[in-house]
Length: 445
Ligand SMILES: [Fe+2]
Ligand SMILES: [Fe+2]
Image 1: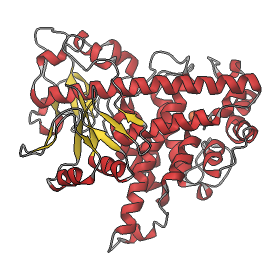
Image 2: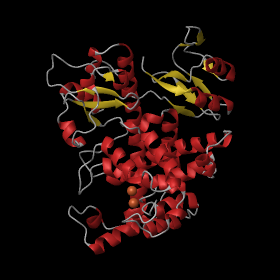
Image 3: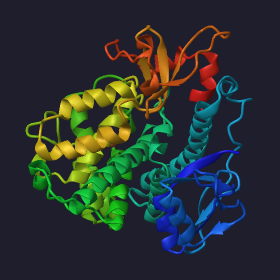
Image 4: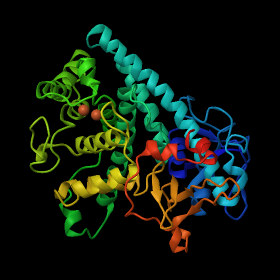
């Protein structure tokens, strides 16, 4: 039975607030003591605290008949969607066993789940953009808030879920829709990580001099919600830029580029003002996501000083660059996420003290080997990154009789199968085309 691991901390929070959860499958402690049978609804903290005492940090919840309800009885997650991963549609499952098999199944389930959420979010942003175009600026702000809440729920349940969201490497038609969701999702994951760091710092004794210099105050959940709306809406001003300029295949003229630039500091705030959205946590990301994040950074606009830039806007900018680079656009191919993270780290590392914590939260969230990226091994073979932890990779082969086992790089002892970081870059479209058939079904989900 397919399931997703939900953080114990999250469940405790939920139950504390009056919510309930049915795991949908019998759950045990590590030593095999049953803690809850599949029909039992967990509505008290005892069971969860008992699990916590055993050192477990996550609980499996079935994606078929497990449910979570909030304090008002509203169903939160795990509505049955599609059928769980099976060997018919994911042939590589036939070849693997044990932990790797379990991991691939889990990842496939998460991918299917996020794909469904993504589809809904995309429909909503399409509606918002259509409304703006038709009315000259007005949209349903409740729909935006609901969509953002949905995105936040997905990533709270599973931090790595964002990695499995759609990456449009072949088409750029829906660029603005995908980009809004991706920047919101990536931005929120990074923001959560950065915020956790600030919260931990507040509780820590014996701070190092660098830690002492970090005076930022952690964000409240309410602030995070508003910031997330800003991330989702960051490029909304583009709706008021003529399509022929926005989708131009060739290089923009200076005049056209000036017009495009206004999407952030001028057109975006116009759209927000038309809908009476004045919250600076929303407005700032829209207005300043192309401004400098270290002294004299080139090609930035509007010209506000990096020192006046809010931390959450800097995160918006990093998420924006990462998504733009890893997606196909009308004027460029998609880049391999692995190279993009590396390039961004090199670009921003050591530039400004205050940026470093944000940069670490960014690299820590995306991972050095982001899922969905492609790497080369020392033996010349290419491999697909399934999970950033390890990373867990699946090597390529064109020999259907000798499909290599997926493996965890950190546990591998063979020097030939280590990752070779010095190989030339490979773009995702070409890597995808080179995928052997046994991997296409898995990667393409
Ligand atoms: Fe932008
Ligand atoms: Fe953007």
